[in-house]
Length: 373
Image (cartoon, rainbow, N blue to C red):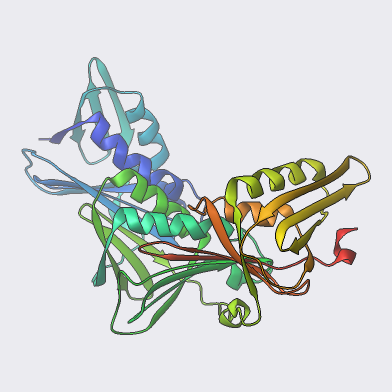
């Protein structure tokens, strides 16, 4: 007799959707294109891996099963089929195929032996519980800066530091650096992990679609694990050494100032319009009361404008910055008025945001005049 179970299309498509970017990534094993199904009378569990990141997700079942069933089915194919179905779907399993029936639709997919699937991580050691929406907010403030394929492999990831002082996340592309830290969650021991860019991207998608309130941060062997009530997200870690970054954030000798975010963003966007694909710097002239900006692109035109600058009492500073670097970072700041620190034309500009539950820092290195030709 065939084993069978029923699920609602909307519930199953949510699980299958979360697996797609994992099972669609090409690896050295063709079996990673498949999703593992494990069905019992009470639960349906799906597993996907690309050998670097892995996801296990489950949903409750009320099935009349004769015995537990475990098999592999092509992840992309079953996702595309279930996406085009509606309402309740009936599944029938035999030794060679998975049959799907719903509202006059009757189709089947070949299945594969589950023993071909790579071993999945087990024995998770949870370290702390974190509010899911808060973790997603922290990740969103940092992940935008992680490079895709930097020549320095250590920069292709996000540094996650956890200790008795709190949690810190850091990313840099060599030109800019962003750091967010919170004292809301602490750990009695020092931990440092370097997570690959893709793991951060996929984790954000899982969190956005899960609807969970809290999740656990844990370890499993040499992998980092994020676990919700119905999922485990595993990521292998980068073995490269992240740059020593704390010295560059030292603000000794820097002068503080405040400017309106909207005005600064509009000025930077206008500067971007004149770049026309060229790497040209914008000149910034900081002086008490105002910030002057100027840009010249011989092929397009020029820009000259001033912005109100508050609380700046330091010496006049002339510096050059590439406007897209500034724009990318300032876009994640929640403040209407942005605090920053500047010293001279050879030092970075450092932006800060002090919120109730976190502190956000964004640093941009200046561009020399010779780099702009």
